[in-house]
Length: 166
Image 1 (cartoon, one colour):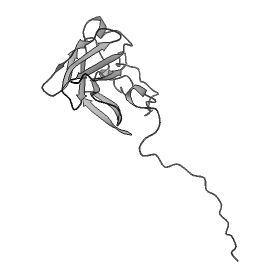
Image 2: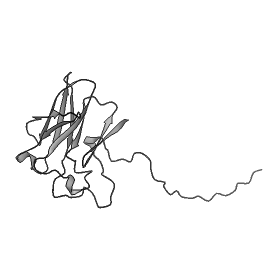
Image 3: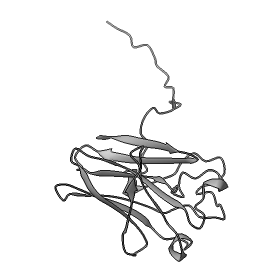
Image 4: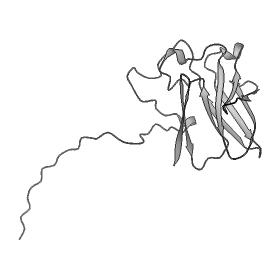
């Protein structure tokens, strides 16, 4: 049980599931795009991309940091729209297949974290063309099962005979 949070950051769609029993702060990376929902080449992270994240919680957020791979966490700053951001530059900004992690610490010391694999150029679709299924995405709360309205399924028709009554 829980709810989904979606973000439309110019050119980038982000999504994450929040279980009701999970704590805060809750972090949602809004840029760069994860490779799974990527649909256009221009959404792929280029060298020197911007890391952007939303952080939700009841307590004041003391610190937000990002890191690529196993690197040292680098500070992010809060902009006037309430989005945490930083510029990923240098060699770390161009390395392929590095995990991007954003961590937020609130005033009570609690830690929230979101992790994804940034989409890289050249663009490669995450699934077959025309497919609408991303599949399991456990670190985002997606376990690969169907949720929401289901298409009508064809059911087998059974012949019914009238049963004589006495």
